[in-house]
Amino acid sequence: MTLHRYVDGRQAGFTFNELLVAMSIVAVAVLGYSLSSIDVLRRQTIGDNSTVAIHLAQDKIEELQARKNLADGDLCPSGGDRGISATGKNPRIFDRCWRVATSALGDDVKQIEVTVSWRDHSAHQVTLSTLSYRGE
Image (cartoon, rainbow, N blue to C red; front, top):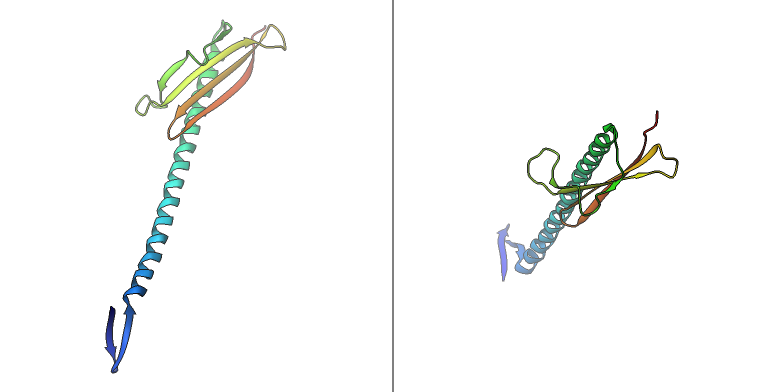
């Protein structure tokens, strides 16, 4: 089958096979662009969630450091805060737990470790750790 037109008495145009090949090339190019766009969006979501997780961990560390009496304890992984978000609105995909222990550096030094985990298309977690001097 030939799709053609006549120009100056000569046949000009494309064959059906040529059109199919051209359409296939365009379809593959569009599909490749779509897949790369999806990957970019997925990576952006991971980056956004990582930033939120770091802020949630920092907030808990600051809260624990502000306490006058900081007792040793381990709320990981069974305790802590479940189903939280940065804004208090959905999605509430973050879980946060923490450990407080006396440091090997001395009785007046506490080690605080906060872990924030979440699951989007795969499981992720961020852990921040700090030392807090509790002496006079």
